[in-house]
Image 1 (cartoon, rainbow, N blue to C red):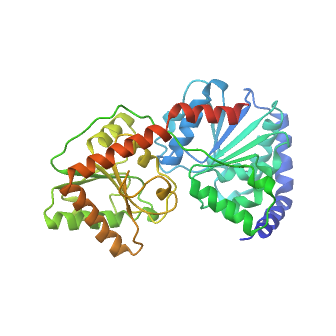
Image 2 (cartoon, rainbow, N blue to C red; image 1 turned 135 degrees about the vertical axis):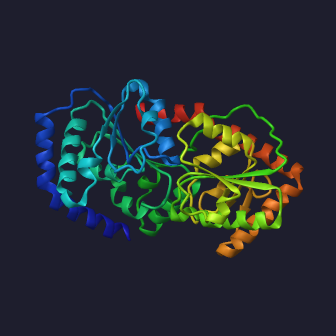
Length: 391
């Protein structure tokens, strides 16, 4: 979709929803919010996931400023909800009202209510972390509102371009997504002033002291959702081939992938399901040797950062933002093949290489750790986001 088409579509929608938004603004003025907030954080849900973990990290960085979180999407598991519930943070979960196509006019109404609350604040800030509802709010808040977006994937950039002129700062968690949006702007001949609003910021993870772990059997782990783009079935096939060849390797899976793994493969793998206990999850990271990903597209999964921060080898398809972080043969290993059968074949070859050369495994792991120390510091992350959100 071109920029012009996206803007026209957005303007038509604004005209059609006007009566409901106006009614919501009236209701928002008649029933003002009783707590005072300057920063409004628009997040989809508290489901387990890397982007949600980043939203939690940002919330924790500014919790002393009493931000208000708006959840807008029906959750699948909500297992990270407790991690948002820290002192000073207020949460309003609106998904029951606004995430239903059957009565979408209620969604319009709440845009009015929330904009009335926001517009009453002094120097308000609204921040959207992978939230479609955030974009829908942008035309309704006063111009002096500071509007900041965080994007982890390019899934929604065709949609979000219609709101580019409203957004003061567009943050991207990988250089690849930032490049994609810059290219989109160039194709549509957008002004330099919009390019100047684009910013790349690395996500953060906790980085423990380096600990060398020696396993007699190569421990390979997958951590993530069972979404189609993750192509977990390819990892299951790699596990099957490695098992049949008799190599000393064990595969573990964390996430909702039970229905994807064939029954015969489950017999010699460990399936943990979703794990919301971070200490338990981090212990699994520490005791593993390799993170294996075969995604069709990715930003930079937090699990990649977590494993690098523990000096582990990341073996991943060379998609989207991954090659910006993983230098093949230096701090990780990349699968550059695109055909699924060849991805499986190359995955098997790389795992065999790591089994046969413990020295290479250690060398790559150390490079991985040093990269994490230099790029994923929590101190830098919080300082950057506090300056952007609170200045």
